[in-house]
Image 1: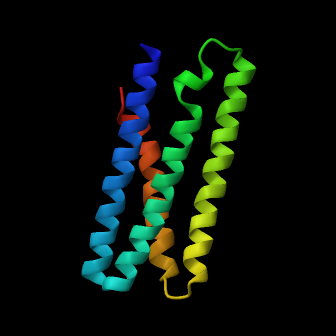
Image 2: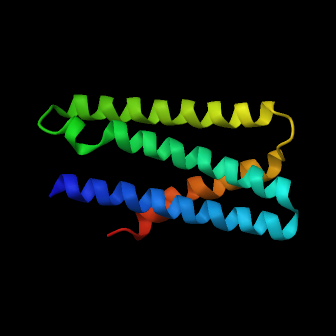
Length: 123
């Protein structure tokens, strides 16, 4: 039961982050053009990829039947990997020189807020 609940929660968070990323990219396309839209899409995708990595590392099968300390350690590791992955993808994108940093960061912020929104509305 717990494993199914965690898996569903991860899927809902990732789905909502993906939807929000697409919405920001469409808004960027309509307001500012193609380059900002690609930048927004890249920023949002970096967050979604980080969330997928977190879900893969912290999933129930990795932490069941172990001590609370091991569960906490697994989640801390997953969060560290997520942050490093997101930062690596963003810095690699910005290093290319043609991305619009404002839209990239805006999409990242909206996708990250989507995680909290999903956790607030998931019952």
